[in-house]
Length: 192
Image: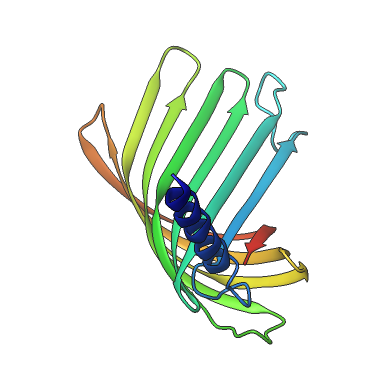
């Protein structure tokens, strides 16, 4: 029993030393958790429908990046967006992996990165009269940006991405292609 306790203490000591062995934010085994969101409410003649309903948008994106080697990371990404106006609404969810590279070292003040990945997308449109349309399919994206550390373990992330989506309409048995370019600002937790 005494040997098991000593072995357990030794293993925990080695694991904790390995977990805290990173010297900077993009070192091997470091983790970056990021998130950004937006809310928009639009009104007036330009945006309201014929019944005077405002257009409301909300979106949230998050990612977890795990560094396999110095500067090289795998990511898990999740995004949610919704839009509503009167009885009509749209909801979208995306989930998938990515791989990227950060151009930095221990002395870097700014962390530029590039990333490529795949998301499974599901979108549902509710037209308010019991008429729904659902799309599902693939989203291949390319992203780049900067992480600007503002504290030891907190950074501001400024990024952009280009998405190429190929979605299938379940009702029409048809496929549609589209692309999106976006720019976002959010926060990143730098765990090293």
